[in-house]
Image 1 (cartoon, rainbow, N blue to C red):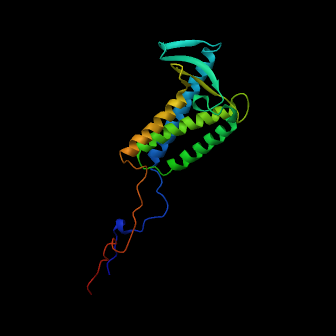
Image 2 (cartoon, rainbow, N blue to C red):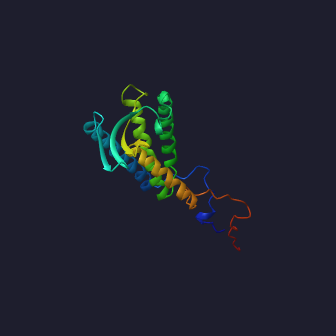
Image 3 (tube, helix red, strand yellow):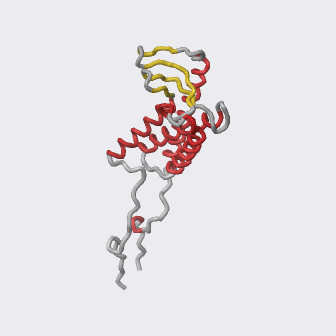
Amino acid sequence: MTENLDPAAATPSSRAPRAPRRLLVGVFALAAFVIAADQLSKWWAETNLGGGINIPIIGDLLSFQLVYNPGAAFSLAEEYTWVLTIIAALAVVAITWYAWTVQSRAWAIALGMLLGGAITHLGDRLFRDPGFARGHVVDFINYNGYFIGNIADIALVGGAIMIVIISLMGIAAKPEPVASSDADAPAEATTTE
């Protein structure tokens, strides 16, 4: 009797495959970079932009102006800062959980950007004034008066755009599980005795 040693014939696991270590490290390293860049730039803004200073970078199109935002993008939901804190916490958990199974470098980059932006916004909500879970996000990049944001916002928007693009390109975050059926199973090796 001959034993079938074909690895493709093995029954697929019902669990999602773990992300390769290098991709997982990449997600967390990129997230750490975004967090560091965002928090250092906010420290710079608070140190140099107090008192309503506006520093033009590209005329009126782009300038630096310090504001403290209790709400979401475009200062929406300002009275629900605690809800935004819960949403940010859930986003961090969801992105981290999903990162453990990602099998694509493009998805790892996008998730790293999203994770870093979500963590740094969560940190602002938890630990900045006026108090725990009610903190205001430090914004300082003024886009022609339409929107004032920060590095975390750039990472969040960039990660989201990247996910849309790679999804449209058909790049999957993780391989689809292969369904096994009797018709697809390889024929067992037979021996003549």
